[in-house]
Length: 156
Image (cartoon, rainbow, N blue to C red):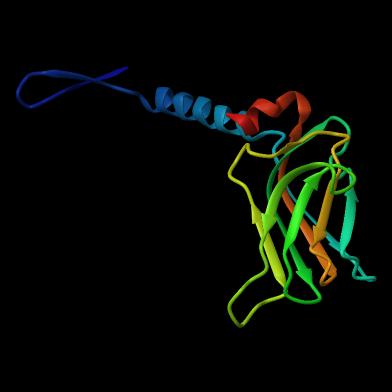
């Protein structure tokens, strides 16, 4: 530490330029280490045949985990939508968007989660279904991906 003499006679210890640089470097390295391995994911699934339900399969690659943020979709008309973890509607219901009521009713849905509420692991499939009145034209999944051994990074 460098010492600086103040006008009223007291001494004050302050960091030298080298000490300050080292301290800031350590802080930057810690921030980068925490962010390493985290990847923002957005996967669009266009659906040409407009089904009323679709299994998106297993979007999570082996060795990774996803913290789901949002699932959005476009429909052929104003309808409700539900999202399940599983291959069909017998799976775990994780989100529901009712059909918009008031005009102008838009043929879209958005289902979102706060952090850490829905974590997908390899083998978890996503299934999206409408009430059956209208079909899906597009489904987009947004998530944060980390290597599975770093799952604590998205859960902390």
